Amino acid sequence: MGIWDQLNSRTLFGSAKATASEVNAQTKDIHLEQDNRGVLLDSVLINDSLMRDGSPIPGTGVMKNVQLTDNARTISFTPNAGEQWKLMAAGATANQAPSAGYVFTLFYTCNDQDGTERVILAGESASVTTATGNLEGFFEDKPPQYIGENTTVSVSVDAMRGTTTIEVSIFAVRVR
Figure 1: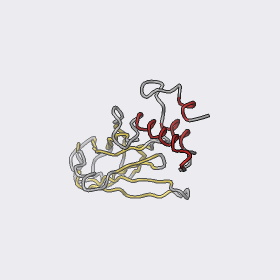
Figure 2: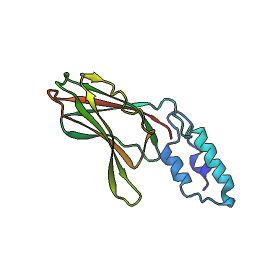
Figure 3: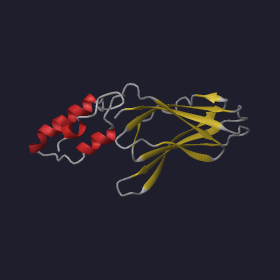
Figure 4: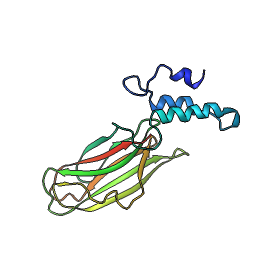
C-alpha cells in the first residue's frame, strides 16, 4: 500500500486530522533515491498541507503548568511521536513573594541515538523576587529552544526563601 492509501480516510483539520505519528509511519521507510522522487514529492506535499514546515502551526499554542516545591525537579512535558515544539516564554507564580530571589532552572532530558539519557541545563534565572514574574530574558539571547519526541522538559525551583509553592508555566507552539 502507498502513502495515499494509508492516509485517504484522514483530513487536514478537524476530528479526522492526520496525526504526526500517522504521517511518520507512512514516510519513515521512504528511501532517498531517484526512483522514489514521486513519493518523496508526495511526502513534501502532505507535510506542507498539514503545516509541518517548521513554522508555528495555527491553534497549537499550549501553556504547560507545573506546581513546584523547593528543590524539586518536575517534568513539564514531552512531545508526542513526530511532534516538534518551540518554547516561547516562561512565567512563575508563587503563593507569596519570596524574601529573596529564587532560582528557576530549565532542563532538557534527551534520549539520544545510542539510547543514553542525557540532561542538559538550558538556563537559569536567579532574579525572580516577586510573587508573579514572566522570567524576563529567560529565552532571550539563546538559540531557538526546540524539543521533540525524544526530549523531556523539566523545571526546578531552588532557594524559595519563604515561598512554599510556585506554579511554573511554559508557553510553546508546535512547529511540526
